[in-house]
Image 1 (cartoon, one colour):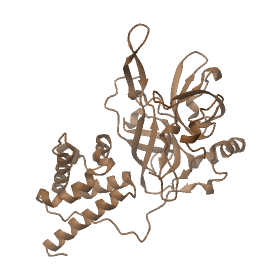
Image 2 (tube, rainbow, N blue to C red; image 1 turned 120 degrees about the vertical axis):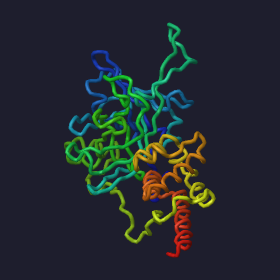
Image 3 (cartoon, rainbow, N blue to C red; image 1 turned 180 degrees about the vertical axis):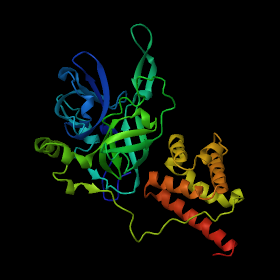
Image 4 (cartoon, one colour; image 1 turned 90 degrees about the vertical axis):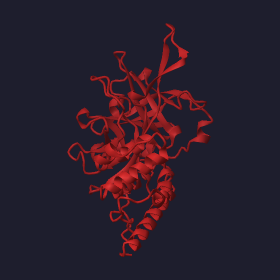
Length: 370
């Protein structure tokens, strides 16, 4: 969703697969983002020691508008783990009409006690699939990597010594290869907050667990890159010339009304009383998508995810989650706050807050406190 001031944020047709090959013939994959007519950002380690004649980027793989083109590495900073690739082959004529050529807005996150929603799109190893409609010469099915649209949260004060952003995202279902991360290939994916590019995925630290990624921070590039490197990014990628020109994450308006608290609700509310709240919840993308709902539940009191009566049908499942939250005081507010962080200031969240406020008012009047 575009930000209120017109910032576009993540555009899937500009998301790149980076296909590199080292001089030793070893293939390497990563992700990237097209930030201008002929320019792609990715992580430096994705193209480290890559054979210039065998480095390509691919867009819209296996879709009607797929295109693959060679690139040259014009900047690769190991210190900041950022690389700028120049497309050296022809760009299809139709691409210019479907994807804006202007650079993204770049953002900075203040070192504060904040937990903020983020998204990223790339091509990790756990998205490896078999294409049974296409066969190799030996008759076995060919393989491809599908896209992963990762949604999650960043706790801004984590990873301060490393100087990266910690991204809490929905983990892969399994980790079958102890010597290879399931997130391999996600490096270089652009990380977005509120319509601004705030980082690039750089690493999966296995000791952090499957649900944590690290991303280099855009707001550190001005300190880590040389003047010549910054000039390249300013001229071709649209990075602001000074850190003061980065868009800073906005804090909540001091006069904003706080969402209604629901800790006073009785734990035996009939289903009809919860109907409006559940209607508002199930209409939200974060709740209707099972992976993002699992991320929300993992971020609140673990007893909710463990004990809520789960149903394969969305609406009964959400009723069960809400009823379980009512039995553990304060967890319903935790649930709604986590959803607000992921959804941002959408019309759906406004409806959710309205339903929560009405439910709160009804029961404050009913118990004599309204």
